[in-house]
Image (cartoon, rainbow, N blue to C red; front, side):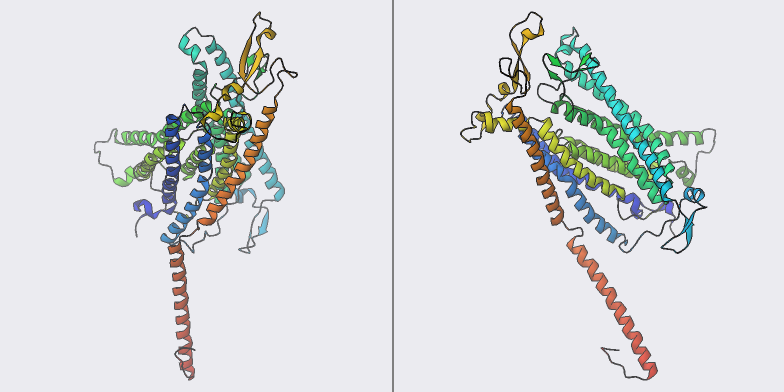
Length: 566
């Protein structure tokens, strides 16, 4: 019998599944990567052409929003193939034993198990609901803590923005918005990594507080909490930039101020997508470097220090292999949950805001190519060999990925409709532009768009002894109109077009996702035929065995034997 410590990784389905899962995720990024590279190529090729600006986001977001469905459908096909290869088609997880903590807590309360028919400890519904409510309250508290951290970064941006704008150094004075955003992104990344350290301990305490019945229930509850914590922590600042930055600044003469002191931050003159792209790029790049260091660099340092302590003071440095293996780092107490969590967060980060950062699949693909090899090296050389464990699926992560797919459609619809200038350009081109009455389409149809998107403000109203007019981005009436500084009719047309686009885009993409899910079968055709063939042969063998048994009984009883029928 082969010892579990000498089993290859491919004989441990649970460990192999995560490597195959990462490989399939990386392969799914490739079409989106090619699409993103082409979009960026044409962006630089036609960056001076008004007709191109904004058109690329719609196509990229449609492709990115359907990416989750394509991945999940191909994962189901891959899963069925692996299940057949590992001979786990008929395997079902046995009835799990109760957790010792659950038994010790509720040993006085018993109920007959409807499956086994034996009495076992039971958690009353009132106690379960109470503990669940306390756990949910803890989750909302941590989410509110993240929102507080985002608010603190916003206040920092306002303070630093004011300081940078007053710098005497011309370079900082001219690029104060970029300098503010870059500094805020780095600080936000430090806050994200610091809060992640606290999240794991709090999620562990909240999960134990619920007293899950079995180990799988504990793992699912813990995984869901970790995902919620880290997803909100990672994406809260991005959601702020995408949907709130620059939306409530007011207008000249009536700016909104925080604490009646700091004027709210506006987007870059070219739009909010620049800030969103910078935020996503820096966080994604730094987080991938940090994760790879913690997964391989940290175990390498720990293992080197362990070997150094063992060899120190020992004359004979020849240590048995089994002792060297024992001194390797043990697998995380949560198993492979951290590996799945990292991939799911990366997948969500890449698909939810793909319209704002089309090169996100490129960074994800390059990272995964390196990480798959690092994980294989880590499993074989830096970690103690995990005990063999059967697994036929990725568990709760499949449902989380489906939720990410739905959120990606909604988020990309709002990014295109609200954050980008795609809808204002569209409305101007077909309603207010030079081609509106001729029903034409082309580069000349957007002439005058920038001037149309700027409103007038009378400087004499500031009471500073200045006269003339300044221009600012908004759709408000001029000072000489009957309703000065009120929203114009064009503003309401744009708002209606944005809402209509969100509805049409969501229904269209959800329809495409459903059609793709219908077209791609869960089991490959050749594998389906093989499984049916095996079932047919088994039935034939059972029939032949039963037929032979009945014929032998007829011979013993003296009845005539037929070759076809018993």
